[in-house]
Structure formats: C-alpha cells, structure tokens
Image (cartoon, rainbow, N blue to C red; front, side, top):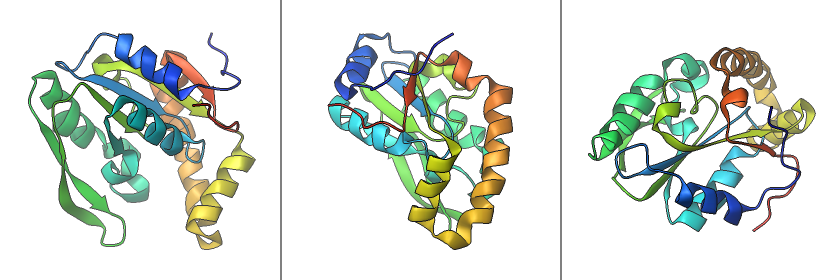
Length: 190
C-alpha cells in the first residue's frame, strides 16, 4: 500500500512521466485524481508547465454537479481513445452557467498530456495512463478551499459532491491504483 508523499517535487513527477512508456499512442498521459479541493489543479498546472504539456480539467468535462457518472464519453471517446490511435482528440467545454457544452477544446497528439479532476483516473481511463497521481487532503481543508473559491452559497453543492465523489473514488479503486499518492495539504516543491 502506498503512503502519501510528505512533499512532492514537481520535477520528480515530470521525470517519472518522461521515463514512463506512452500508453496512448505516442502520448504520455498523466492522470491526476483525488477529491475536490485537494490540490489537483495546482499540481496539474505545475506538472503540465514542467512537461510543456496541455492540461485538461475535469471541470471542463463534467456535465455539472452530476457529471461524475457521465464523464467517460468525453474523457474516453473524445480524448483518450483518439490519442491511442495517434489521432487528435477534442471535446466541448462544459459551460457551468449555461448548463451546456460550449466551445471545442482541441487535444492534439503530443509527447505528454495532463488530465486532472475527480474521476479522471477511473478504471476505464487507467490503461491509457503513463502515470496516475492521487492527491488527497483533509475534508476541512478541502471544503475551506472550495468555499473560498466558490462562495459560502455553494456549501450544500460541495457537501453533495463530496458524498458522490467518495463513493465514485471508492468504487473505482482510484487511490489503490495510483502510482503516486500526494499530500495536497503541503506545498509542492519545484
């Protein structure tokens, strides 16, 4: 069983990704998963910058607050499967205010791609990943981050999402399948 890394080096994660075999055509896909508010986006942006890679956000994939169960068609059919065939992927970004798909986000074949978000390292996605990272942090910190970002009026949505993500992550066995577990309550090292 993996234990969380006390502090993670962005350079080390990028080096691990570079050394890993591509499993999506010629693209090394890094999946960064874990519960909301744990620090996935911050880590993904830094790893993506280190790799010179595009970062795809789960928030652009989910169809709103109920989107965990329906993300595979976008994640799989729109992104991972085309890359595995060495074809460009693409998907319509979810517009949370309009409640519909908006502009198309292209996902070209590249050396590396970082995808972050709750549920991105689900069972169906892991065969395409060169590296799976799971970021975790205590609920109190995660909800505080969420309320700071979204406002107190969103607390009920965060609590509802938390119950759903806990079940989803447990059912998918995501933490146990990770190559690296990161403590998102600590600052990331360069």
